[in-house]
Image 1 (cartoon, helix red, strand yellow):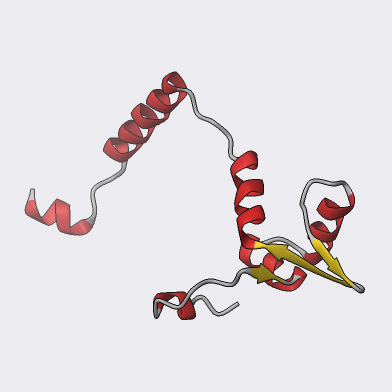
Image 2 (image 1 turned 90 degrees about the horizontal axis):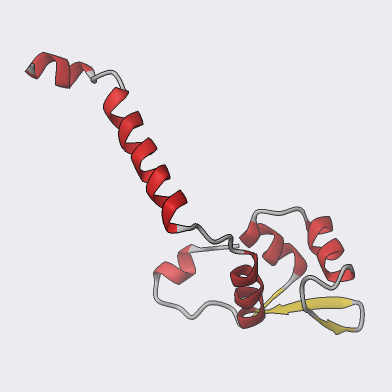
Length: 97
């Protein structure tokens, strides 16, 4: 899929093929077919061809999103801060000290 088109302010596609959706989601095409067969992902079947509507893919992705509690998010932030502070200084930072 050519993401550069979107950088030129062109509208994203309204429908995706199996291969386009697999590339967009960084999944294998077979995974897309399995998700359709399990009823997890809605699609339009035209003959033997499947198409996926962008808005329905967005809804699917939103339903897959895991939620982070404030407590967990705060802990993660503290851990990231501690990790950043414990990293050895770069050669530039050492030269300036």
